[in-house]
Amino acid sequence: MHQRRWRHLVVINQPFVTSDHACASRSFLQQSASVNPHLIVPAGTQVVTRVEIQNSAGEILCMRGAVAVVIKSPTDNSHAYQLCFLNGVESTLHRHEFSIRKQFQEDGLQQAGAQLTEFNLYDYVIYRCIVGSRAYALDHANSDIDRRGIYLPPAQMHWSLYGIPEQLDNKDTEECYWEIQKFLILALKANPNVLECLYTPLIEAVTPLAEELLAIRSIFLSQLVYQTYNGYVMSQFKKLEQDLRNQGTIKWKHAMHLIRLLLSGVKILKEGFVPVRIEDYREQLLAIRNQQMSWKEVDNWRLSLHQEFDMAFAKTSLPERPDYEKANAFLIKARRSMVDDLNRS
Image (tube, rainbow, N blue to C red; front, top):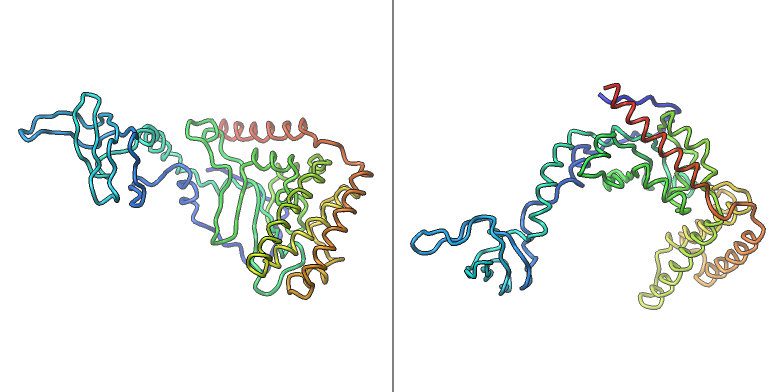
């Protein structure tokens, strides 16, 4: 049994709701074997038969598993397809009687990989925190609890042919856990969601290894924050402007978070720290969400923050790039820790 030592478990008023771990493990390994009733396979597609092709005398013309090409598709899957086999035989089959060749080749890997569902991937979460409105101090009575974090998969699963999911998602409980390498890459790219995970004050569970990551979290802060934050806000404001023109309204909560993102980015460049809680601007931000601030006022604030961002970028002491070497060294150490666990088991 895989063991984890937890530290700094913070008690939150709302209890942590566990999710269906087995489903999370299976979802990335298995694709549905059932036929999509709405997908029409186009002519020219190579397929593999699931049945034998026989003539009226019962003689086998093509074996089960033979390759054919679709030469005529029906208008819906209640009717048959016309197929031509490599030996020149033509026959009609319904959709459930053949597989698309590329999918057929992948089925074996998926079925063999199903053995890895014995791993309960949520058992390998090494860091769990709360982000979103509750962490920003912008929550209200009905706000969701957004949990994010990192999971470190077992070595034999990571080494296997079948791969590992880049993240575990549970929409019902608002949880997302990134595989450790994916998390580090996103942090190095100055992804706001991931950086906030490293700086949120609401930490629910952390292993000693994750504590080490928090201790070096400043290695991810660089001038890339300027491009990442600025670029995202600019593109999203253009979409909001389109919504305003086409629909006459916008998602005001989204506008609020875009302004919050600019405020955060400016402070990162100035102070080398990710300010998850924006308490100094709480009332103004809530005024946006509650539509107590006009679109023109919001846009003017956005433009002034872009200018402030420019000035902060010109004077920042942050490095041009994050520390890739230290991030890589941490990843290798994390991977080795799972090898040690395997050797001890």
